[in-house]
Length: 350
Image (tube, rainbow, N blue to C red):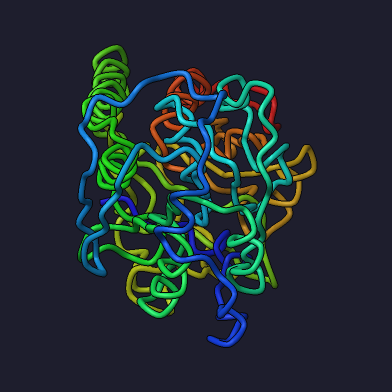
């Protein structure tokens, strides 16, 4: 099961910023729906019949007609909407300061649209969201609590994650199905999921040399004197889907269950494996890693079996959307081939 990159989510920590009184002026769901106008940026038509109902962790939401003004309050959902041909009127910045919070793998699908960019750093911007007059709010990767959901649904119909989901980065398949259903494109959502799963399978079949090799995945550079690494199952599917076996036992170094392991310099040798992926983001990142603890003497590093990503590839690994995963397959697999062959450079250049 894919889960969340916690270190990257520090900036997305949520807090309720407005009181109920501040929301008094917000439109009701029916008001917001009536305000919608046809979105000329859409590139597809719905295949489901409206009205429709989407079930989620806080109940169910009825959507009367095809949404035309979709506001994204989570940090990655714009990818799914854009791939479905639905251009949102607002996105939410996670990190990276990409244009309109849309990363390179999705920019072409954005076209000339210029969605408003929301900021979740100090909590949801309810007044700003209401001012956008949405007829659908999407928050499957937004860390929503029921209280936050109630405030959003007072503005417009809101769809969030399925029951049992984590606050962030629950199953990308579930998120895709939820969003596709909300915009009336369920069949297209299923096609996106099948397409990504087929690409993973094809990449694995094309590289039998990956099968059974051990691998570790680390966040890009040390933070506050420690290194955040990912135990098996925590955002490591991009390696296990290819046949790698994740380094075991790292979960005991996590502060809480389901979080990243926190390694001090003297424990860095725990991540040594046949291949290591460091999610570095800048040209200086590899050297920062090599200077930390015993990283430079790890067998995988000394023998050029460590991959140092650039910022875009690191972002694609963290995003966990159908679009970003296809980018990962395209960009990372060749670098893993080099690493397995002992030919990976100590730089972000592949």
